[in-house]
Length: 199
Image 1 (cartoon, one colour):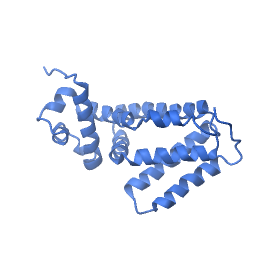
Image 2 (cartoon, rainbow, N blue to C red):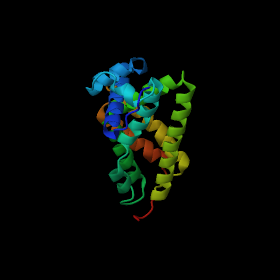
Image 3 (tube, rainbow, N blue to C red):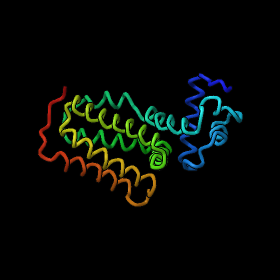
Image 4 (cartoon, one colour):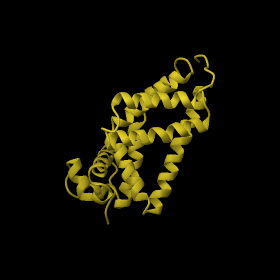
């Protein structure tokens, strides 16, 4: 009987390694041995922390979100005027933050593809991503930014695709074009929405 290890730092390092493997090799390349090798740990380490490959897949997606959360950016969203320019600034920060962790986003794409063949993974990702969308809608409303929940969902959908283009086809648009597209997206979605004063 294998004893599951509890060292949280080692577990996080193994999940970080799993993210790198998913991004580089795809879901089919994600094995205990590949994770051990990527993490630079003895063979058998990952299997001491995770009961199955499915468990690594599930927890790798959670780990991506842990690494993407930036409390400073969230707190900063409450600063300044509540207008389209501030929303655009926050959206640019979001795109840059995700693009700075390309393997995380690519790993999530791999997990989504794998989820089409694994109902349990699909259910887990659906719950996790729905919670992320609901958090973003709630944050937007709490911050008093212009636009409603539908606006936030439309921004989320469009920016996800823009980030995918940036990471998978980086030469499709220049950096300036991507920047202008984000700004235009926000301006058009929020056209006519009143600005609010700073909190």
